Amino acid sequence: MKRPCFTLLLTVSAVLLWVVTLTAIDCRAADITLTYSIFFPSTHGQAKAADAWAKEVEKRTQGRVKINLFYGGTLTQADQCFDGVLNGISDLGMSCFAYTRGRFPVMEALDLPLGYPSGQAATYVANGFYRRWQPRELGGVKLLYIHAHGPGLLHSVKPIRTLDELKGKKIRSTGLSAKVVTALGAIPVAMPQGGTYEALQKGIVDGTFAPIETLKGWKQAEVVKSTTEATAVGYTTAMFVTMNLKKWNSLPPDIRKILEQVSEEWIDVHARAWDDLDAEGRRYTLSLGNRIIPLSQAESRRWVKGVAPVVDEYVVASRSQGVNPEKAVRDIQASIKAFGKKKFSSYRQYKLATGVK
Image (cartoon, rainbow, N blue to C red; front, side, top):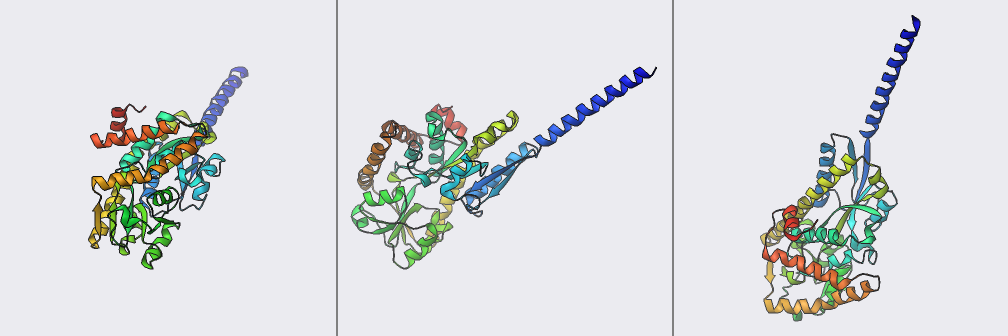
């Protein structure tokens, strides 16, 4: 008579052990904490967009995922962010491809002065370009999405309407924009955004090349008088949001699916944020009595011809790295032209219209 009781006790114990084991597994799955390194300061609109992304991921995973954000390069510096993700210093990272020139020969084509009309255009084009090309240079990480600012424009202390008026002027610029400045006949002066206000105020530089959002975000509208709206040579800076590949592969499939869904939706969030920031910069500079000077079609053609050597230099340098740079440039130019023919209300609509997978 004791054997059935003993058997029952064993069965109950086994069931309890099974329940406890499942509960432990569930608890572990509900405790996924990720670190996210962001080079923007916490006050920047793009940092706020990243914070909203993290909160949305946490919400849709019902708290199973928590993301700790580190702003202003406090976990990894901007030029170390990609390697930081690659090597597991941070699980996630946001920074610019341009901060490690030569590292991303395919993706660098996105930053060329090809005439981006807006942050939305630059962001949509960048994501579509990546999905079509799938470059091996990003094979070591999981790329979640890309965003990119609106056209870099010329802001100056004195009005500049033509290339002749720009020639010989000292223009604050860095990286690719310095090459654009040189090609247009001006003198590039390298300095961070933080030092530009004082440099303009003291006459150390005559102008700066940057998105118009900097006129409010960095208060530079207080020390310039005009913006030359040279959108025909508008360049951008493409920015990645990546995840450590080992960490990505360790996540449950449903969590990976949610991360991909939210990331695709946030392409629109970042695009709007860039254009909203540019609109604020435009309103702010006009409110101070500054001028925005559009270029005539004939003058725009001169500027486009002027920056051609910048594109040529990219083509020559990238060809030696096994890239088909001419095809890459044509691809981007065709994508930008699509925005001249049609307006897109969302990245999803853009994908459907352009055949992006």
